[in-house]
Image: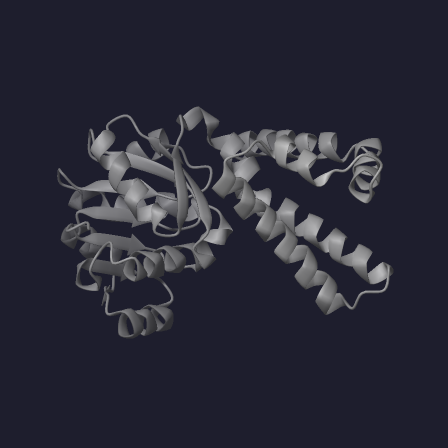
Length: 268
């Protein structure tokens, strides 16, 4: 359990998901959680529902909290940081989930040597199954990284990466859910084309992807090993895989991640 006060600046979809995950996991007591947001109605509702502290402005939040979590859109970061900078007295520190905003940019707005940790979560965090990559800024230490891991483990799994790899993370796990949804949609459409109801076909496709992912995580086998266990010589799976390879599905997915990585670098 973390006994420091944490303040959320922004409670959009990701901020709210993280907030709820922390409370459900009992990582931080609601009485130690503060939040501010431009959506006052949502803020008030969450305060009542979850027992957290709602604050009117970001500066007051920064004064009261030990950890400040920036859960705002990238273009809002340059507006928020000057508001809280004067309140960031050591040992206060920042966690940012603003996509594409480097720790060096955040540090440039803050008092000298303020620790900053950058995190790239993905949307499955909203159902407690997110994947978050964590990077340390110039002044963040192992203790900061470990606390960040505890916080984001409340909504899924975490890894520590060098910040230079964050564009790859954005392209793989950040954009990855969209690729998976596209695959599920295609599997569903195929089932419908061949006579299944859309409801049954969607359930079959979704559960198949979910079960396969869980099997990979729990067995720790290489995907190729599990793929080969499903594939009998001359069977239906072999026929289907042949078509996927012939159509270049594998290379198309690789190219998609490379393209998304390049785009992330451009946007950063």
